[in-house]
Amino acid sequence: MPRTPVAIFDVDTTLIEALESALGPPIDSYLMGWQVWLVDAEDPQGLTLEYRLHPPAGFEMPAGFDHHDLWDAVVTQLAEGADRVTLAQDTRALGEIWDLLEVYAAFYDDAPSADDIRRRAEEALGVACRASGEVDHERLGGRWRRQRHQFDLPNALREALG
Image (cartoon, rainbow, N blue to C red):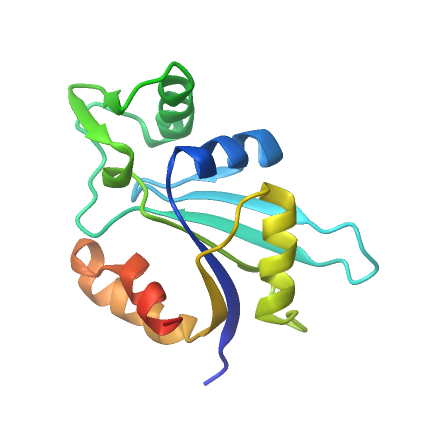
């Protein structure tokens, strides 16, 4: 099975601020909490990197809160110095909203090495990554589809990369 080169970052306020500063708002938001950016590298390869924020296992969007507003609500409150973020009637710590940032080539054909992805992501964000290497996206995606909210995808990625 082909493996996907990735770099992963633990989520904290510094990372969220770096994402906002370097990439701006995500291009897509999902009901499951994911936030996604597609970033074209400025090089002859024409590489596009996908930056994907993963929520923790068990994440559910707060009742009455629109997932399209999640990024802006979190970024605004963190910029105001909040330790916890209020979303509709829920108040949550940042780690209860997002747990891990994963970066990989959006289109797997001729994907660069994990070290190259790590280098590019660290340069773009100005933040050191936790780990990089290759993971089996097909296997992990299959487990997530079967178990949904109960599968801890961020920890599975951490474990896969040691």
